[in-house]
Length: 85
Image: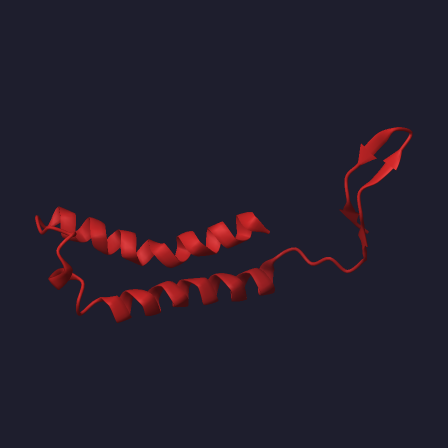
């Protein structure tokens, strides 16, 4: 679950990182706020859009678990990991 949250956070931050790189390649200082003033809303919406698209695509094409979840258990002194039926 944490891996999924990290993936979504990185997808949200991708437009910000690309814009930062764009500013750096253009020879502008990305740490100056006036370069970001008109772009914050657009970058936010692009990040949210990427997250929503990834969630929708995961829901449509992700692995479907029709059966129930069997939690981890002990068998003969060994831990058997949890699985889906």
